[in-house]
Length: 203
Image 1 (cartoon, rainbow, N blue to C red):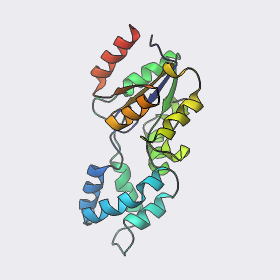
Image 2 (image 1 turned 90 degrees about the vertical axis):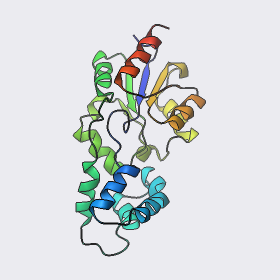
Image 3 (image 1 turned 120 degrees about the horizontal axis):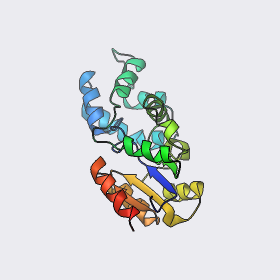
């Protein structure tokens, strides 16, 4: 029994592979014979707005990829983007499922993701049914590790601050949660997470 009422999970790097990070963009650029540096640069200019829900995937792609004629379609490129999403080897999906089955916790996703990729991943991997609340950047208009997203999460889930736990694989996101007063664990594999949860349950 954990000393928490709310457990929040990142998705990419904790439950699933990353959907559209540096590695995934490089692989897709190679597949379509794009200039990878140009793609990375153009991506960087618009990704924050896209992940906050400020533009659609179509607008993102027009800015990052289809700013000149291509010999492939939007749909072909999007299919390649989706193909990078997989269950994370040594991920925490079993832990999430066990917590959900217990019925003892309010479970949420607190992740940075564009709307289209987020909804694809939630549906394809059956994650929507595991979560009680979706605190995704594309819905909140905020991104980790900005302080405002953690405060918004606290406001939405309610309850006592010390009864909220957050699990994320990135140090800066863990630090942001801790700065907001949330207990946070940096994810380093299922076994390590179970060990830490056991330790916390004994405190």
